[in-house]
Image (cartoon, rainbow, N blue to C red; front, side):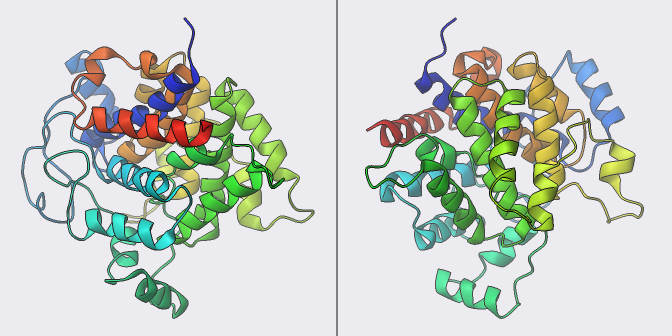
Amino acid sequence: MTITMRDRYRGAMVGTECGDSLLAAYEWMWTPEQIAVDMEARGGLVPHEYEPFDYVEPFKGRRTIKKGQPTDDSELSAALALSLIEKKSLDEEDVYNRLRAFIVDRKSILTERAYGSGRTLRAALDAPTYRESVARFEAGIIPTPPSNGSLMRCVAVPLAFGNQEYPNGCRNSEILTSVAIWQSMVTHRNSSALWACVAYSHMVKYVLLGNAPANAWSKTRVEMAGWFEKPEAELKEIVDIDLSKPDYERDMKGSEPGNNKFGWVVLSLRAALWASIEATDFADGIIKVGRLGGDTDTYGAIAGGILGAHFGIQGIPEHWLNVLQGRDIMIDLADKLYNIAHS
């Protein structure tokens, strides 16, 4: 079966939402053993209603989440895509306003009700204006943990800027790197988050060109390793990332209650890379990353972008596609990003 570039674009955007919405039911509170038992009882990874795990309204408390409901991973991916489409470049203030509209104002792009939020995101987007947020960052008021909130939304960056050719002689890798970094800086300024976004963007760039995930990551490593004679520790950690399956007890859970690493950006990238490289098809990759436990919806969103770019939208199971709320919006965004990149 031929997979066109447009198929890959659609697969990347819809795959992000698919991994997010299907795995949100297992987020944070489930162990790998519990997830395995639940999936077996349902006959696999089956979209279903669930009781939410959320900090903020309208889902704070105990309410039922409908199957196919996207979380902030998908919503913020859509918000970044909309900004890149409208501005045709990175406008940090516009990105800030769109992210804030979801996180603070609870205005959904994909469905009727906004669901999902992260602590780092809420702190970064609390200020009413981007300028005030920048001032708070510079004053050290906003925390900068190595969390995954900018990586999970990053898929539109390689779609828009990964494979363009520029008449001014600027290499697309430089522009792609810059956009990946600065979109992260809007909310996540930790160096690990910045380099994770860069690595993910370059990997998806190579996957879009037809490289299998393993080969795409190999090319990404070689490219990034050659940028600096003495790279900073955070960049080196990304380039030398462990591609083995993360162990829940050793790598994720932490030694004390409340001290887990579920939302760490390096772990999140590692989980997505492992699942994508080992996957035999789209569904296999999503199931693999979901069964790890931890921040499952975010791992699924990150892996879903890679897997969707590799297998195309036709590689996503139809019974998963059919329940995704906002699926057609994600397809439309993918088409518009394709047009920007290939105009």
